[in-house]
Length: 204
View 1 (cartoon, rainbow, N blue to C red):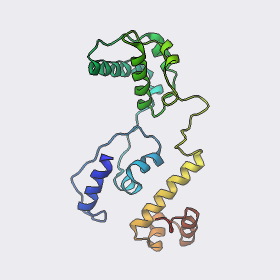
View 2: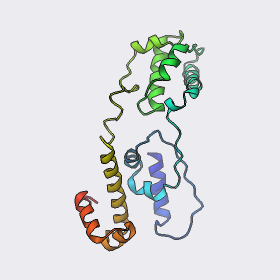
View 3: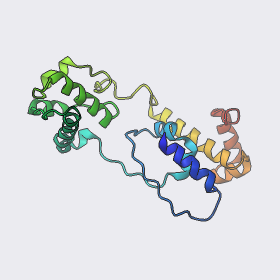
View 4: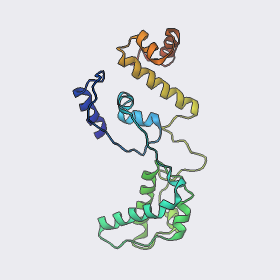
């Protein structure tokens, strides 16, 4: 939560309503691809206030050519920590992982490689080791492509994003409905219905 704490300090020192530009750039990376998850991690107010440009790398499975280098780097790091020679990485493992879907992307891959590394006891990393380690929290099955913590549908994801955006603008306006409706480009009646739908007034 270091980023949230840093943004909190900036928020106190720089008024969000100030028209002056502050010579500050905040660059952060995250393995969280879901917008609701990002907002839950950093706070919806910070998310909308500082969100400037999004650079999204393709998923690991969409850049298979990078897998050998990523896995080799993880293995080298694990070997250095334990002060032992880095084991070989069998092509069978690379082929198996190139078709896998990882939970939390890089974090899931890193977790799996660490377990395979420990199970190998210094021998080469092969696809056979996958049967010997826990994979439930690192590899995603085809039938479970949506994580439990994520919206269950595209509709739910849109509604979550819409709710957080309306709530943010509403709070920035000092909960002034006229200003909020004008900022959102909707009528007062539409805003009233949305506030009621998302239970925003009672939970702001």
